[in-house]
Image (cartoon, rainbow, N blue to C red; front, side, top):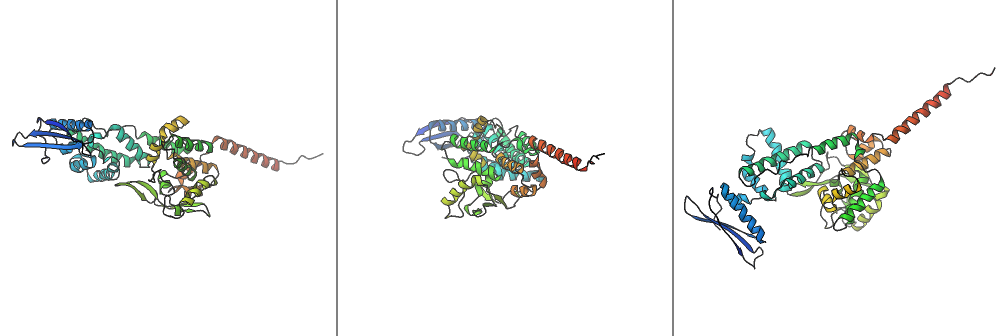
Length: 402
């Protein structure tokens, strides 16, 4: 293979596929052309596992030749392509805008999509990634900046002729934040209504998973009963649980980062203690017994020992399909946390204690879980009537007997 260089605009390519049966990737696709300026013969080849893959590679280079594009660029992964064109893609931006864009690219876009060739990135793939960021708790501006960086890089790919349309222009993702804002005004709007509903959900998720791994159901039960995030559940270690008091010393979470999943401090950087209620002590105890020799071991892992994220839980259990079938179409993994906090508020946990369990920075955030339901309102009215009735009887003058 000769050195890689830009394909001259409109150059005619000679293409062939050679089958080499003794190779791991037996189909060798090759394109050749003559440089119209120097007369030098140039070629480029790449081995593929299947013949359709080899044909698709040749088709991409033929398209590249029509636009005079670097043949290496035509099959480049997003992370490498972005590094090559970033200055061009971000031209015209001021520093105060460029900095958050680049942070979004580095911390979210590259870990999620950087391993894919530019030509394989679809609108659906971008949509799933964006909704994954939202489910992981990224703020509106964080998602906006990350998506804007991806849009600019993919727009450059359109200008380069690598793709015909920009797949990063997804719509509708901001509606999730409107839903989240509505939910904060009334947290029980998306919370599971009862304990039986939680058990039914956990069992259905295990049954729908391809491996019938009971750990998926236990993660769901644990998250709801502790009112915590999936990343926090993934981060719990054996040594974090005190079986004497049944308290969990929550001090880390697992979250996507540069190069993959990383463990870091909790949201808000505040460690907190969370009670483990009677209903989940048996499942926690069984896991502690199995891992008691390793205090640093993760309490919850996937079926192959890997770390769990909200996206992994969603895909492994076919979450969207299951919750729709059960009648909870809008239920997200994060709503397990809202379920636990709503139940604790209904149980009469004082707001200052609930705030510590939740790890909220603001008391006003916790107070939104205290909205009374219709039954509580009725009971409050009855209590006031009884109170006034008692006072009225006590203060009324006794009838005088003549």
